[in-house]
Image (cartoon, rainbow, N blue to C red; front, side, top):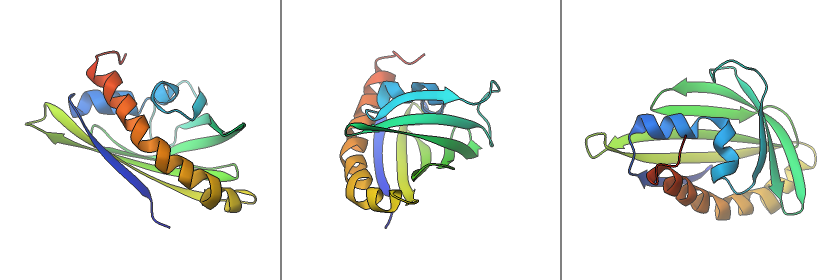
Amino acid sequence: MSAIKESIDISRTPEEVFSYVTDPTHLPEWQESAVRVRRLSEEPIAVGSKVSVTRRMGRREMTMTMQVIELDPPRSWHVHGIDGPVRGDIQGRIEPIDDGTHSRLTLAVDFEGHGIGKVLVPLVVRPHVRKEMPEDELTLKGILEAGAAR
């Protein structure tokens, strides 16, 4: 299956969008299913950094470790799940628009199922993400445009 892809225009510079969206501690603020995020090291986020992300799908919570595999500020990043039954693969791209005063954020999300995850990905995870992702991007846009991002 192909990645689920969504784009949104945000009235903030690429640097502002990149700084906020690549800080994993912000995930629960703008992603409905993100319950908790724990950085697994104290260093600033860089290629190789790992974070533990707990997500709620229905009544169940699943925790997975995500690792940064590409980071090109303020243009793009790529993180990949390295454990758990459902391993996300997220690629983000930010394009400057309006002479760099605004940004177009594009997120592409795909999944690998392992064990029970092979059943969960097509039946539960992908439909849930297809519904949640546009709403999450609108929440992100609202936070950034309101200037509430820290």
